[in-house]
Length: 353
Image 1 (spheres, one colour):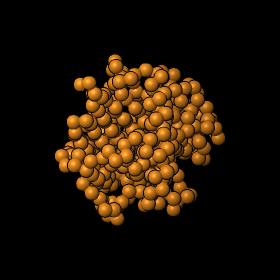
Image 2: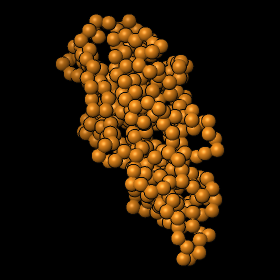
Image 3: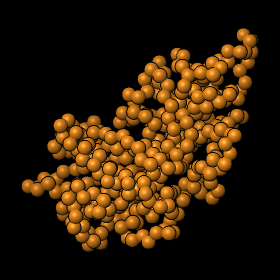
């Protein structure tokens, strides 16, 4: 699991008039919507006695801890300690981490890391969002698998024939189609492009946890249809994720077809799930170690190289170190930590380069 990327935390409609507790990167967060409509994301653990802020009450634009009533605003600053005298001063360390939030595509995204705004990777763009002539239904579901395995499954161009019999593609794969496949580097990821007269397929990843698949298909009669999938994955911990999947198309649009497409996609998900959840090792190997990779796996190897680069930057969370220290509570570092000052909670440990 990696710091410094945008993670889908909840659907927008799930954050309304009560705080919401969400687990991501092995830590808990509290989401709440201010009176102005802005969603805030705080580290969930109150720094006084460890109460869950998401289990408390929203008082105007603050969360009140259910244990002793301490209140924290959307910036994570403690604004009230009930036991202090009227002239008492709230300690400077009385603050919890607060994370940048953006709402897009009906999803609340939080940037879980401390990079300054100018250095943050953007959220993967759904270019068709809101365009006339497109239908884009959405699915949200969990998998008991590591985020790296889930993203790599979306990058895998050749498993369909064997994992998805309902797709009706048995015996249709031609190895020659990979002869002219191209690996294209992007600012925050890579794309694997395969072009044939009948179909153009683009698989790619954006950052550690966003992935897309675009299909440009010959529909016959001189027309082409487009199927564009966008996947945003939140690692709950090292062994489970929540996946937000958008399924865009520019043909057979409408609500009735949306249900058909969603049901079909869920049938594919049910075929993928047992295979991915049963893979060993649980996390993807480093580079090509332990796996006999072929040319069609080039984009997955490129993804692993990106992960290695981000680990070298100190972005890979050391989950084992956290598990070995059950008496301490850690926090994902927020951008405010770069401004200095002292913080009660230690930042999550990261893996050595």
